[in-house]
Each structure stands twice: as structure tokens, then as C-alpha cells.
Amino acid sequence: MSLIVTLYVPEGMVIAGDSRLTLSWTNKTAGGDQLHMISASDSNTKIFCINQRFGIGTFGAADIKGVPIAGFINQFVEEKITAQTTIDQLPQLLLDFFGMKYDYPAAHFHTIGYSHEQGISVPHAYVVNIAARQISRVNAQQQEIRYGAVWGGETEVLSRLLNTVRMFNGKDWVETPVTPIPWNFMTLQDAIDFAKYAVRTTIDTIRFQQKEKTVGGPIDILVIRPNEAPDWIAKKSLVA
Figure: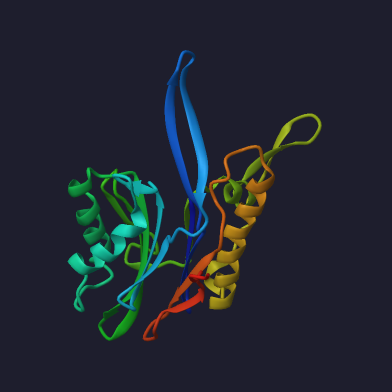
């Protein structure tokens, strides 16, 4: 599992994710199937900059036929991406590449980028579910641009923090409604701060919980803005 967080605000878009690679397998025992899970690496890449124009984040299936999914991204770029590729084509290209050829794995992607429409830079943010063969544009509704955020993978911590919850007040369970976040007033720096907060808070919370540590390692953060080169706000590097 992983956590990928994508924000789309008026100044630009941000995509962030952790670096943990978790392996799981099942052994058959006399008492039934026994699930095993280990943290195999904290240097797995889940955020990618494509052709210096688009951002991609991946979560869900950690591998395809025993090879980490990150290892397929360069192949995907070489086979599917050209100088003429547009952001609205990118989700379908991902679905085509990872679909029938690899038996539609349980992999998910966030994609972000801008297209030029009637001389204006228009933001596009998509969620791609390979196994379900679904593509959803999440930052537009009825042709109108919407600002907000979407996250996928290990979302329990954020859901408890940011959604309506029920709390026991001594007698009854009472709903504590969600306090809205004014996404449309967020600056790009606010969006970067939120992305880091979301991933870091999840890492720090599950560290103390009695559960699998499926999110961890360095946090990579990529920013995409109209008419500018992508910015790596945070990106792990190779060291000796």
C-alpha cells in the first residue's frame, strides 16, 4: 500500500507520495491461510515527472509479475509518450499499457498536467483504476473547473481527520461534522504544505498503531504549473 495525495488549486497542482515498498504473501497452514507482510524498501519511487510536462503518482499493486511497478514507467514513456501527447490522452495510455498486456493489475494512478484550450492553460487531474478499467477527471464538473484534493491508497488516517466522525459523549454517539477546507483560496505553497502534512501525518500515525506500516520513507513532492517547467519540491536521491 502507499499514500498518494494530489491537489489542484488556482496557482497550480501538487502530487506527493511516500517511498515504502510493502510485500505480502499468503502461506497455507492447518488453521487456514496465513497472511505475511513486510516492509521491503523505503526507496521505492511512486511519483514521476513525464516529459517535463506531466505528473504521475501510483499506488495499489506494488509489482507486476514480480517486478516493481516503477520499473515499467520508463518503458511506458518510451512506448506511449511523444512530444504530441496531451494530458487528456495520458490516462487512457496508462490503461492501455498496463491493461490487457499485464492482465489489468490492481494498480491505480493519479495524473496531472495542463492543456492549451483556446489559448488558455487548463488544468487536468485524473484518477485511473486499471483493474476496474475506469478513468475519472476529478477537477472538473459539468465543464467547470473545480479546486480540491484527492488521495488514494492508505487513506484511513486522513479520513478520520478530515471527514465527519462519530464521537461518544458519555451517553450517545454524536456526529462531529467535517470542517470544510477552502481549496479555492489555497496558494500553491499551501497546497505543498498540505500534501506534506497529509503524507507525514499518515506515516507518523501508523508508526504508533498496531497495524502494518504500509506508508513510510522519504516524501516526494512534484509541482506542475502552467507554462513553467515542473518543480521537484522534494525528491529522494541516490547516495553512497
